[in-house]
Amino acid sequence: MKRIVFTIILVFSVVSGYSQAEAIIGSVTDHETGEPLVGVKIVHVTSGEKAITDFDGNFEFNSVSSGVNKLKISYISYEDIKLNRVVIDEGTQVELNIKLRKKGALEKTNHYMAVRPDPSPRS
Image 1 (cartoon, rainbow, N blue to C red):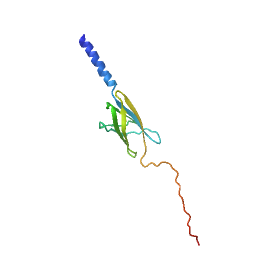
Image 2: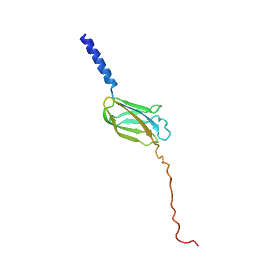
Image 3: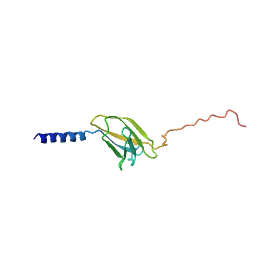
Image 4: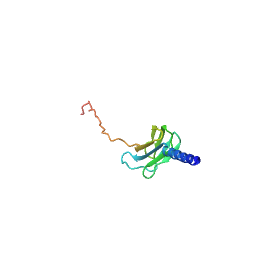
């Protein structure tokens, strides 16, 4: 009888340990269009683990350490992003929604040019 009770307690503690694992999940989209980006490389710098976004732009890191985590996000023709303070509390999961900008994308601004008149009179 003691063996059965011990086995049941052991099983519940293992199951509850797995359900409380820290995780980072998220999605990566284009900043302008909002479309999901497929094949974006996300590196969990703290552990060295890597993930690639799926067809919906989603990624996940399971069983990461609690505390401060660092991520690096990179994709061809888009600006790289470094997230140096992704804080995860023990037993929680963090969801990130990342928007990448294209490299060389200029902000839409108005440009003005001032012309100084020539002080010498024309003949």
